[in-house]
Image (cartoon, rainbow, N blue to C red; front, side):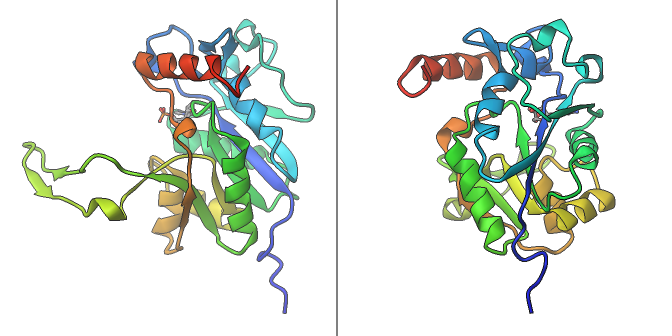
Amino acid sequence: MTDAHAAPRGVGVVVVAAGSGSRLGAGVPKAFVPLAGRPLLAWALEAVVRVEGLGSLVVVAPPALSDPEAAAWAGVALPRGARVVAGGAERSASVAAGLAALDPTCDLILVHDAARCLTPVAVFDRVVEAVRAGHVGVVPGVPVVDTVKAVDDRGLVTSTPDRSSLRAVQTPQGFRRDVLEAAHAGGAGATDDAALVEALGHRVLVVDGDSRAFKVTTVDDLAHAERLVGGPGYT
Ligand code: C5P
């Protein structure tokens, strides 16, 4: 018997861009900070529109910028049919708002941080492929190069996890729609969507991420992104 959910078809993408980006100190929300003259969001959308099977796209913007006619949107070519909704106070609330606005026919959902603005489309395609292959939750990840310590509130080390078993995870994170909706209905406050899905008892697969999928968080990250787009492949 064929499980209607085993091979999701239409891909719905939620791009969360509602964060304040206070650590960047740019005076505008992070997704609207310019990188080589164009907002981070514009760079992020370049890969999103190339996702195979894209059926629906929702951009989640800060409430004050949820009108794409606002000046800060300059340089963002919103793809035809894309919707813009206002985000919430926490990332998980922004994802939930985006999820609710996606076309109901999409049964494979990708959630992507606009701040990971240089993520290659190949990462999106790897995640989609693994969800289509039957995994209910898939995240891109890269090996951790530093040794990681868990500490208590006094800074004393409580454990040192085996580094070879650790991955730093990125976005886009991909899910079967019913699973992601149940995860968001059941909880909030997690720093990624996979954690909510894991909390429901589902197994999440990590596929290869990419160093270019780093999250622009600090001024140094922005400088790194500027160097990358000045190099081959981004001109
Ligand atoms: O704050 P952080 O860098 O972890 O945010 C990751 C992504 O989530 C960013 O693209 C940011 O715009 C988005 N976000 C959001 N709504 C929030 C907080 C973060 O859409 N309330």
